[in-house]
Image (cartoon, rainbow, N blue to C red):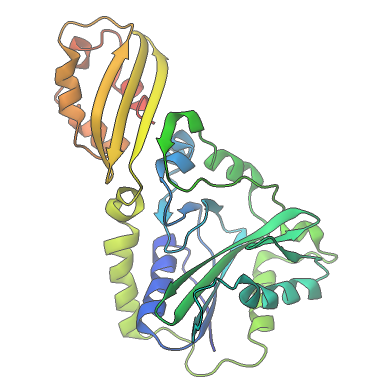
Length: 325
């Protein structure tokens, strides 16, 4: 098994590395990696419905869709991620225990009394410290998981808070759970870097076989995949299942109520209501916005040449754009 400690903290590159090795390499691989602050959503989730859009936009936090299923997770440098990629799958059943056992053993050596709880979580005294997910491709399996070591709990709470009443869809919902940092259970404190080294050497105790560096061809392929897929709107947001959005907001011009559908990342069936005054028919404004991406930038761009005061007296552009999130 090759063992890799990825130095980059770019979530697009790290997720692209997983996929490239799954598809183009034949070796069994173990990886440890971290992402700078980001939200990583499950393959079948509605991206917008998982996030606190205002906080994410203000903090410049990227939202990236992964290959595997499951719920949305907030990553930061206090969260350590591990990946196993193996060949030789002989059943369609998901086997989480096979891949979490070595992680559990490593943590127990540190005195952390963790265990596999349910199908895919590692817990300590009922508090979640790790969530896991899998993706199979032919006879190859990718298993990855989080290790909450010294993650920012306030940021986790802020980044993933959203009003579920805004969104109506059939996408997979994230499940809230009581979470805890592994560091709080250690008898002897370790820095996150020392923790990474400990886990790496525990899993790699048998000694890696072969060259543990990514080849130049692999690096080029990963960079291309990161740009074309994991940084793209089409993958991260356009792949969201169709959903309906509703919101009512009080502005300087009165209450604005908005309803629209999103399909393949594009706004459709937009309707505007409210108690605001107007000079021009709002249907023109609805038509102007239909068909654009469900992002602040795209909506603001559609309004660039529009005198919004004609359609909603006293409603500013920023307040109107806020209605969409």
